Length: 499
Image (tube, rainbow, N blue to C red; front, top):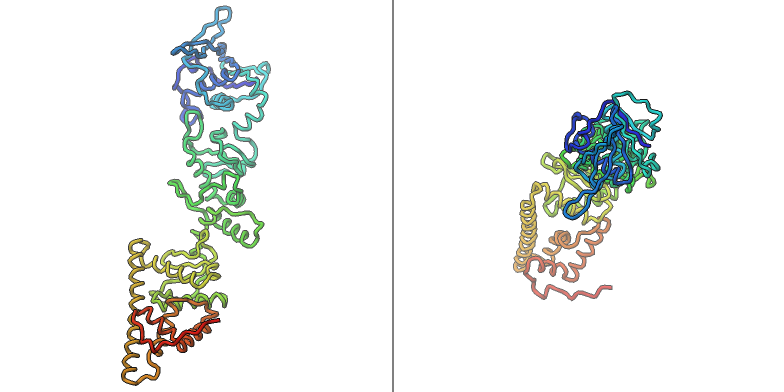
């Protein structure tokens, strides 16, 4: 038999007055409905309850009651009057009250009531109890619950024993759990099992059935505690939890109103775990959210700053070439100088980002240097446009259009000017190589506009194109494509077939 016992006497009105509670605000139960829900749940589940309150003895029974042509089992309170006939009092609710309550909820309710009054409960032989006169005992006979008592008890109340950590209103207990607890009592079934067992001692908003009202609030309570703790073991276990655990779903960025910034210990541990994962693929996988938060707070402070492109030789060539292209386009990201845009190289950028801006600085991911030169140029141009526009879409669009127009005007003016000069010199008989001089002078700019070349091949490609331009009139054709003004046909030679 399950016995719930505590000092003091329970009044008969406690069984029938809905919404009446004389408990303190700090008590777990304060709605004035839980005892009625528990009684209905026990009776509906095939159990029975007998109550001893000092010298008075009560029990509960079910009697049929009609409503709208349907029959309900109304709960009645029966008081044992000794030699006199028992008295029965209809309680005004049926066995269907709290129809969604499960057996553990009834155990939780009766158990919390006993503990709130300084008592306790358990599987006890009533004959072994010798209660004082001012004492209350609920004797519950419920075979199916008694048969699984250990499991019911374990899932309803937080385990006792070792406490790994207690900070910021959260107790961390060893071992996984399917449930979250509040002051030792189960209040929420987690969507996934947790790595640790959590018992929140801080205030929690509960519904009338004593479950968590706002799930995101208790998630924030646990997450914020981990963000601020100095216990590296707790931090590491939480941020490397596997995908089948509750902690893995934490948004460590803390976008909610209750968010707190990560502590130094949390940042140090996450950075160390990330670095370990980079060097050892078998190391525990770090939560992407945790990694991104650490990078947000650390990446833009702990980077290698170069006043010139001081990287590996191959990477330097790629960056120098990309910088040359941007300078030719009038969009250089040159290093140094008071007005120059500062460029940094870093190992840490969130997610798959190849570049980012922060505090008026451009950050390039190291892996970007392994990409094609055109990719590097695109990232640098994108970030310069973003800096110049302040991130405003319309301003960025206007700036980009203005840049493109300036570039086109520059190219068009330069080529037309060279073409006009060459034409004048030809007519005056000054130049021996009319038109071609202008083509050769404009060829590098045309090359950049049409086909950026990898630095390893740039010199050879330029010489080849110049030779083709001189020998077969290709330069003339390119000039015509840009200026819209075609040279005389007698200056063009037939282009030979290529192998």
